[in-house]
Structures are given as structure tokens and as C-alpha cells.
Length: 412
Image 1 (tube, helix red, strand yellow):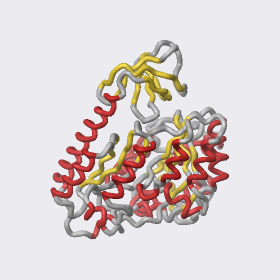
Image 2 (image 1 turned 135 degrees about the horizontal axis):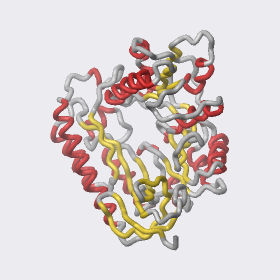
Image 3 (image 1 turned 135 degrees about the vertical axis):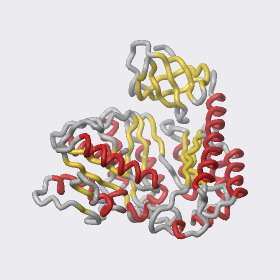
Image 4 (image 1 turned 90 degrees about the vertical axis):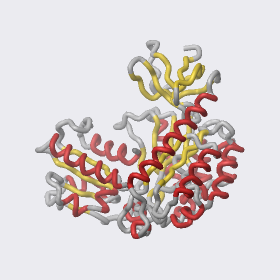
């Protein structure tokens, strides 16, 4: 989201007007993903829709899918320009070129950072401080698509945070492919960067995006706890609850260590909600190993499940395994974990009834304003005629409706 916002702003600065996808336009810019087969399929469908909606317009396909499958995209009708993960930030160097060669991949290894801009409609700002990854997990294509870890400096990150606050954003989310690698890549400490951003005048809220469990430290948690700006929601990837599977995945922790990290987070933030990525149907995953994952997730205070069926990705070690799981088995396991996740999130939401919470409101829909609490629970209040968008309000959380809390603003 931060990258797309930065690129959208470049178009605005050039005099373009941003339109909704599917409208007739002069240029369609598709910033693509390739983490799963489903993402690849979605990218191809969007390319076809863009060409159909604007047959006279130019179609630019950029990002990870473009990086990995440039020749496939080149063969598709209506694609004018293909930019890799590094080249997309210099889109006008290629779009404005008279020669306009179609494919531009691996022309640069720079990282400029990225942030939500006024061209976005987001209330929450995303500030990208890191890209790429030095880990070599057996299932993951990101190191091939995005390259090795790269960062912006602490000084630049803090300056960008000040800029975002000056534009009216009250909440910032620090993002990256693997932000826990910030120090080993930049030589500057992540905890110092976080401390510097927490000290930005006018900032009301800060969150971290996904953080690998082996990179969460007591010192980082102490800095977060000692600030009234950090929001108590964490996203800590698990991937599997089986130690054998974790080892095969080449993850940098086992279930004992993961349990310890979750316990440490809850020690510092007792009311925290915790999200986790889980991959099911990894090659060779037995029914018993899947049940290990299920039982671990039952036991741990994980509230937000992000469940993915294993997807074979070209050039990865896992893709060459012989013991791939049948699609119907993966589908059934995904369904079981999603159901468990919904139960756990609903139960966690129910606990919040009759409490008060500060809510950042993000949108209005059908007579209600919607926002999130500090621990990332969805809240809705009735529209009473006052525009609450981008406002932080104290709300009485009256009752839970599934995974949404119905409330009323205090002293509106």
C-alpha cells in the first residue's frame, strides 16, 4: 500500500488524475504481487480488464509478478511497459521515453522507501522502511522477486514520519518485507528508529507490521510499552505448529521459541491482539502435523488468523519436493483453521464488551462510521451527523456483533 501510494503521487505530480480501476484512462499502472498462484492469476485478470476498459490507453505492469514472469506478461495483448520491483519507482523514466522498450528488469538495486500519500484515500499511513529479504525460507519467492534486504536510514524514516503527520495522518504503520532485519541491513538499530518516530510531535498512533518472531526483543517491547502512542496489536508469523515442518521450511525458530515470544508480548501488552500467518498443506505435512498446528493455535492467544494453502513457487526448494498435498486436503485444512480463527476473534471481541476504547475512524458506510481500537478490533457507531473520519474518539463498546463492536461515542 505504501509503494502504490508513492507511485500514485508521482502521477499526480505529473498532472494525472487518479481514477478507479476499470474506468477509461490514459495509463493503467498495475503494481503486482506473486506470493501465491492466486496472486498471479489475479494479476493476469487485472491486465485483461485494464486492456478492455482502456483499449487506447497504456498498460504498465510492475512489481513482483513482472519481475518473475516478464516474458509471460510480454506475450499478453495490450501490455505496453513491464517494470521490475526496482524500476517501478522510476516509471516516468521509461513511460516518457521515446524509445519505450517494453521490458525493464534489474536495471537498479536502489531502495527509496515508500509512504502513503495524499493521492491515497487511506486514514492510516504506511511507511515502508525496508524491502527484500536475506532469509531463504524453502517456500518463499520474495528473495527472488524483491532481492536482498535494503533499508532507508533512520534519519530519512523519521523525516518521512514528520511529513506524514504534517499531512494530517494520525496513525503510522511501519512496514517492510522483514523489518526485523533492519539493523543487520542498515547498521542502525530498529529500536532507535522506532524511538525516534514515537517522539515525532503530533503523531498519535504507531503500529509495526509483520515482525519475525526471532527478531522481537525485550528492548523493543520496552520502548513500545513506555510510549502512549504504540497500539497493542502485533503480527507475528507462525507458518506451522509442527517443529519438523518449521525445520523443513527453514524458519529461524521452533514452536517452543514461538510460544516464548507470544508470552513475552502478552507480558508487556496483556490486552494485545496478535495476528499470525499460517501455511497449510506444505509438502509432506501429515494429518498429525496439521493437528499440531491446530492445537497450538487453539492454545495460544492468537486472535487474527491469516491462513494460506501452500502454493508452489518457481525456483523455491519446496517446489521441488515430491510429497505435495492434494488440493482438496489443503482446502479442508484451510477451512478448519479459518473457522477456528473466526471463533477466537469473536471470543476476543466479546471480552471487550462494556469497556471504553479510543477508536480511529476510517470510513462511513450505510449510516455508520467504522474504525479500529488500539488492539485492532473493528468498531461501528451510528452516524449522528458529525464527520468522524480521521478522528480519534473515545467510544463506549456496548456489545459485540460477531467480530465487530457496536458502540457510541462519548460526549459527541
